[in-house]
Image (cartoon, rainbow, N blue to C red; front, side, top):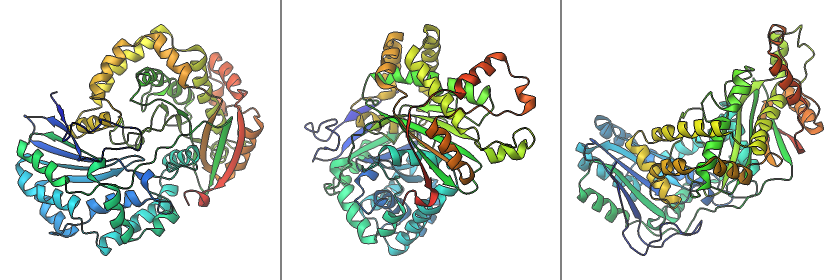
Length: 519
């Protein structure tokens, strides 16, 4: 696929130190696709939720949503919907820790009709009281209610970041905190848009079949944006001493959702990342059944829906089968995601005779097994056969990442963020050159299992008994129905006994009421 890169000023650095940007006009990334009927524009600003002012957590997210859900000086939000409906256009905003991206997708035949809308939304958003009230109300509802009620899996992931990045501007959810969103005023939004969405922290991405005049006009118009004064703040974080566990006690939770992680000092900018991709894929490739975690926890023991591992933030893992662009970060961590396992209350109801005296469900066994599997890889590395099979899979699999013009363009913008030219194109070459020794060295350098953060969202009936098991490192045998246990292979029975007594380096356990999270 042919693509070109250009800059407005030769003096602009590709990527400076984290948090430092050129004071010149926006950089431009172009992906020419002459046979496409579509045009995609992405405007990526280096701000993100880490640029939220203290006490106004959620401001960047709210501001970006108000831009795309509001109107322009020419049309209200309702009028825009009616005007754009026949054109089947699509535009939206996404905010992560370090970037906010506006995406506009439209048919090339409507360039002239749609462009004034794009121009108006970005350069002259109206920010009306009515639109502000609607967007803020939805956001307030999310941070106060939805995140705690809709998905314990997402809840555990955001709660882990709250713990791992505590005390930094990465701590809060991108959508903010209950108090932060409540404090935001419309005047805050207007000031933040002027301060955080500037031409000097902007990268323009254009893909598809478009005339050169369109690209030039877009660049010239966006050069009218002011220079930014608010920047993303990238923290330096360290692993804890030992394993720190926070158990979130919630009424009527149906299972225990587990997420564990620790900081790593590598990103897509580093060559070690490709080596870790192989190790990670072998341990627990997202939504794939061949990973060790999935095989041991889901396939062999039928404990839950899936178990995976990651070496960077994975956006909306419950919905996305493949990694998506638009969430690049300089501060990175490795993680283990164990989708909810059964709690004691549910197991007792299912098997009152056999498991009627059970006080703790499958969470401690599942956590022990996941950490143990990672520890085995750290200690023993991959075998030659496992390395070759996994690398071969990845060399084909990563080609699926950029299946649409929007994704292709998004990964090019992320490439620029990391100081690379074309991450997806370069990745196959990196994987091809890897050796088994490269992968095992990267594992020993970046992975460990003695110091990590763990969050578990579970039912209030399970929280304290689970805390006691983890704090005291007492054995946690796997609980099976009799009909299952009688048919278990001998090797599974033997492994279960080893996992049940596997020592976790737990040094701190806290039980937190759900009402005290994301405040």
